[in-house]
Image: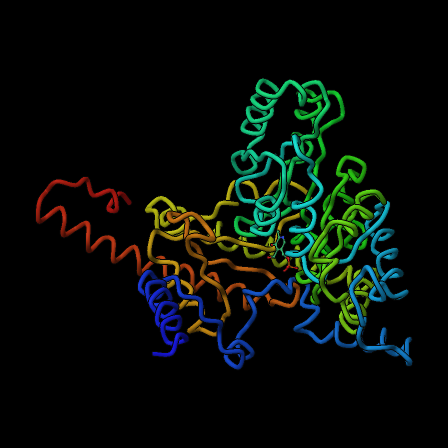
Length: 442
Ligand SMILES: Cc1ncc(COP(=O)(O)O)c(C=O)c1O
């Protein structure tokens, strides 16, 4: 038997197990996706789907008629082109940072930071819902790690107090404590309470050895002056020595920049293996990023940000204001982790997580997809087993009519689930008379 056959059979068995557990990943057919209305992708300002970014890219390319396509080498050799340096300088100024270091993706940037910057003896404290790329970086890194409950200032406080108790060098300010946050969380769509976190951390660690870091993947381009981000909106640049801004979401292209001081930048160039042992990004990718930044700073960018915020608000109002919404939430059919918080604060995140009862996210996603709306169900292990969901993502170019129809579809689906529940619990009552039938409460 050919040894490849043995391997193939083992791989197939594993994949088959995944399929049977409902976890097999099979990318969608792009032709189908192209015909659907986008309520799923991260192109939140609709820069890519509208073609606006294509024009900005071509305009940018036209400024460099003699451009060389490839970078020819890694960043540590010829790959650091003048265009790349200029783009980094532009991003640093745009986001009011000392310096920027560009990576081909946010994933690689996070791995680079978290595998290299925290030093032996340091502690990294992270929100439980932090992105997988930060986990992957930390796994390769040298610091001790501690997790706190999602967006909980109380949990962060307990975590920091415990670290100070068990590690006198940290308490004395001789080792650093990194605090890793996201501005808008990619699965729950909620926003980090940075002011309170900064305040309590300064109280517990008064020696200045706390280093806050924030991943602005989902806020880049969407909030703040010209879309410069969450931290810029609040003028907290100095409080966050490490920031990550990705370009694959609101900016519609790809890549990311680590915003930090020049020492951190230089350290990454020296120690980030992904950057050292890989070819630097080619000019067309960089020009797309620059084209995106040109749009952000224009009237078009401002209008798109406003549309997006209006659309998010419209969806929340329609959904949570629907006369039947509370009934379905109470019945456990559907819930919205952001229901209590979406009204607070000056802006909202574009990710709307519709958490369904266990085993039902695929059914809700299918209902929306059958009606022509592209959405993504998300399952364990990406989210906790009991919190599977349909992740709706709002876009600047979604129309009010589309949003209204999506809400109608969600409510119709919830109604049919409610009817099914009535059937099941009604049967339970008549069969065994053992269960309180709360579903009849209205
Ligand atoms: C919070 C967060 N950080 C980092 C990334 C990775 O960014 P990229 O897609 O540019 O690799 C993502 C993408 O899903 C994200 O949501």
